Length: 258
Image (cartoon, rainbow, N blue to C red; front, side):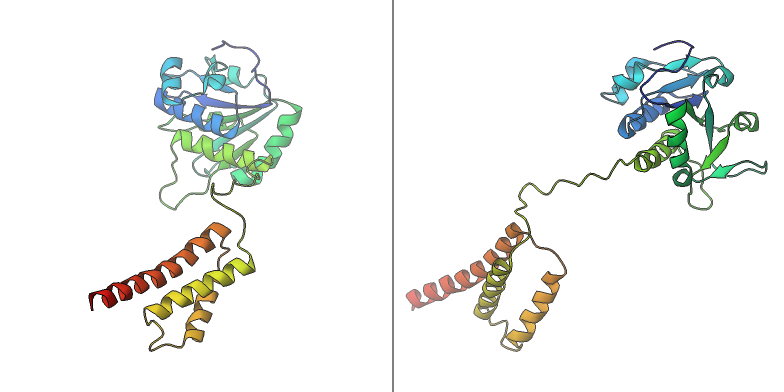
């Protein structure tokens, strides 16, 4: 960990925790930052800091922990910043530039391209004071359920960092398909599936009091609401075949016993 001086890191964004009281909360913030690609953390007058414990809670976060910077005052922490954003649980009576995280995220990223941007979060029990917020150009207030607006420190950092990740184009990568996905089932594979289902239902006399055509139309409608892949279609087809074959075996065993 480094002492005072210009914030270090590869981007213009850095997170500031003002007087954090619990090392567990610091570890939660470190994990949130690592999850969302933020690397620079400044601790202002922390009650206790233990890098070994932090990395024990937030595994594989040495890249963030090794860069942690400590200062004695918020003024010192913000000395090199050109844009400061504070976080508050709710708008206060004082007139300020309040924004939602999603609304402000693009501006934060733009400013971070030109200089150091500080994202400031207050201590766990009382947040940032009015004097602290006076140092901020803008204030973010996360939407929460009425009557319970206070967020855990790590939650607050994660929420803001998540919006920054999205605003920067992150999270747009396509999710990988399932390991056994074979791509969408073809029309021929679906037709074979429906034929197998119909054959199986016939063998258990499912159509004794129902019209086969109507039942199969409903099943096509139900399955049509999804996009079955080839593996799924084959599995459903196997169900139909197994029902048909099971009934055939029962009939054969009954014939032999006679």
